[in-house]
Image 1 (cartoon, helix red, strand yellow):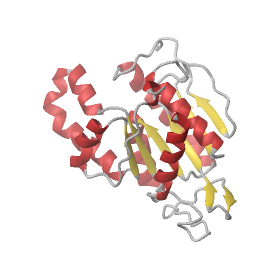
Image 2: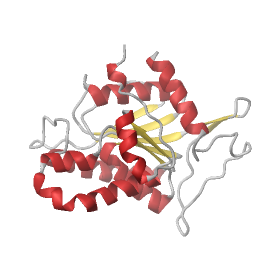
Image 3: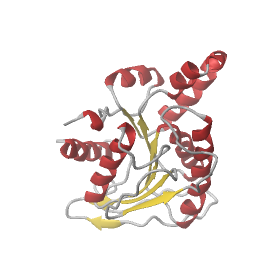
Length: 240
């Protein structure tokens, strides 16, 4: 049931967004390039009979991966489905966690810092350090090839926003929670800055091709930002 739900999710996501397919491009690939910048062509394969294009996806995971807990379990299931769809995926994540081995999925890890270990869920200075290292890891990959799509989990949406601004790469915002609520609840001294933080969150939501909140309550909360498209995908770790 989980696998079937995820297959339908990706099928509907691609059909309802600007992510390229053979159908919505009339059988031709028309890749947008930033003006004045020569970007590498994305790797791609075609199945015109079934009107599909194998996407080249950059998947950004801002937590230890893989571990047996909520978000990493959900990420693993999405990657498994993308592998079975034969999409080409580069994953960038933290150094902590176990490797997974799926066809067409390549795992890239940041360097390990000896004084930054045992990273827990939620906003923290440790995550900020490794998030910066993920950004550094992104640079050589985007210099080597052009991606059709960025799948950005949580705060990785701001890296995806930069990539869209400079390279015009669309992104999916995989939203497990409101980053603003997390930060203000943990650090009350940020409350006076809440309006500014919500502005950044609004920009991230509005520029996503699709926002994927984990529950309907979160979808209702971000409706005020007027996202292009919202697809609720409940936490798969809770399904049996």
